[in-house]
Image (cartoon, rainbow, N blue to C red):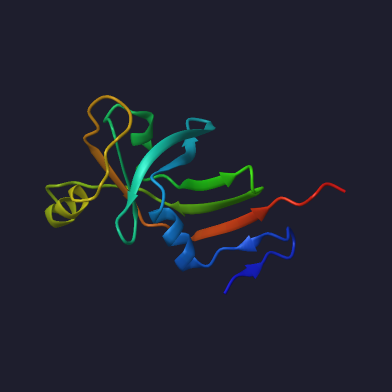
Length: 143
């Protein structure tokens, strides 16, 4: 059962539905502090049952997210129906090292995770969200 955020009037998405919405998409945005400012990058990802998994190149700025606190946001906007949802995952990504966790790496390689961007994306990164939250926004008529 959903609840309402009394401050905003937005519907709060229950945890199981947040997971379902993450599973239904494959593109989001990752934000983290790099240097002295916040950076935001698009990522494509897969959900492995408990974590968000994405790939990048070793020299990519996204690889610098490993070990840092990040926010990953996934959303859907329907402008015609004036409806949107957003799921926010917070956590600390970790590098998946096939030498240390070969069974995990085999499982992750079985996911449908194919980077959209050109180039070699040999770095596998995994983040278990804590917390995971979501909101539904329904646009109202202007008064």
